[in-house]
Length: 193
Image (cartoon, rainbow, N blue to C red):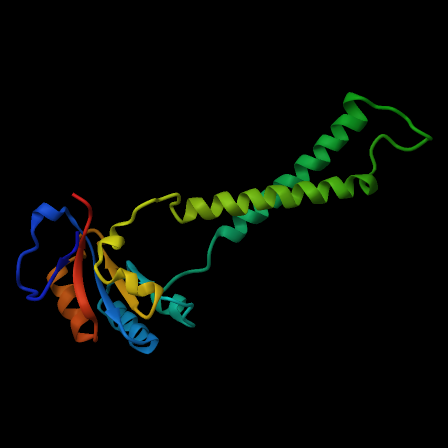
């Protein structure tokens, strides 16, 4: 359960578990982007934003780097190519060599369709499993769901979350800062006890 903070100087009850993050809601994308830039200037880096639709420029504002998933997919595609070519070469030229109509044991021309299919198959598996691994999925519950205003994300709310980041997490200071930046319904969100 989340604790609503009306007075930022009040203590945060321990019975709710350890604080996970501070969350707040903004009315517009402009306010959200401005708040993200403002809180990053204060040194906070472990941020997340939840919006009802894609917001242009939010990745740059959050400081997100390009995904490494493309390298994983390329590695899967290369593994598929090497597996297909190796398997076809081994079966046709080494394990069971048969000369049919004077053709060579192995030729790249007839290996292209199977190589393409295995490249696509391995790349697809790499994309799915890589995405799941990078996103920490499957995860059936997340502490941010305890934020009372989280349901607005699917409709008209823009939620900014400042997550706990080692020793650089002071809920009282973050609540005050987010309120100064225009946040509404600012809460300290606790992990489930």
